[in-house]
Image 1 (cartoon, rainbow, N blue to C red):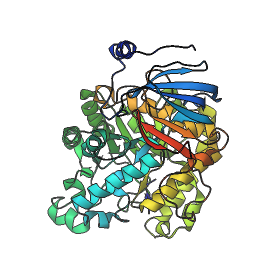
Image 2 (cartoon, rainbow, N blue to C red):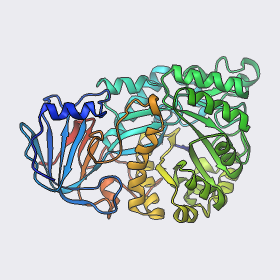
Image 3 (tube, rainbow, N blue to C red):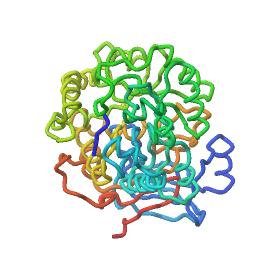
Image 4 (tube, rainbow, N blue to C red):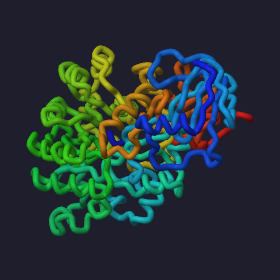
Length: 473
């Protein structure tokens, strides 16, 4: 739902590190610690992104931008910078697998987006990226609205931000969830003055040939994967929630185009019909998909499909918000809430691969913070702290690997293990027991405004570079 408002003692030498590189643990773009010395985290309890219990009293060695060792025995490392975690939790950086960096913080309507300037959109996207990083997110997956430009600026060190996996422009049909044109644009100009199209935020494509062209344009702009609008949405006006946007052969055209670039397609879809058509066409990932049957949830689990489920969107409190009380939106929301009543029980039964999805769009940056905080809380309320943490770390990292040779960051993400990227948080307390240390908040629309970041996140490292360290405070 698019929400409208935002063991052992060892000595590490250069030769040892080179051996790891030759073994395939290659470094991605981005700056490691300027000093070039290893960093040894001591006196930490490690949540590795997978296990239900922490690794107690551990040590973690980072060299360059990679994790070299995780051990419960002391590690002696020449010339290392020692960082004492003070008995806190060391864990992977968070991954949000459904963001819209280009459509949060600037405008609060699609009409407003049509009037936005490219430099406003770009500057706002950079500010959103910075906001995510200092809230503890070291990777995001943008599912509509950007190519590789901002990612390249971040990777080169010009802008602070998370790693970005970008879909490029969302691809949808005329009168679909991505058709944000006003009536004049649709009738007379046929999209020629459509800012969303011009700035590569959304492409209107009807039929397999247009979809192939739009897909290839996205790859030309540096996209890592593709996103199609396969069915209706809640916050858009032209498409009934039950509507089918693309036929199987149209979705297959995008899947084929993606396969030629060794990557995958995800779809925006809610209903059994649209989800089933997408799976039949070879789609490997789903966005939303709350209004589906038990049989379809089982299929998703059996086939290993990744599911970006934003649970905050299933909170009935949405009905009380003015933006969802409009005549064009409220009936859709009511239908959606009714249709998603049983999906959590199905997820608990079949345990599909869920990734963390916040999906703030057309919002202020301040509300984007509140939305992230509530999504963490509500996910854990429905499925448990461990389930949230896995969704927001290791499973999100698995999804990133689906981009194959298109992957801008080929090593492991979302885990604390040898060979993974050094994307690390050190936090007060134990998030397996208390997610508030990561900012989880039971308040949403009524949450008090907050500044960027959390005092309880004491250290933020991305790609071996430390962006925040208050451990001595």
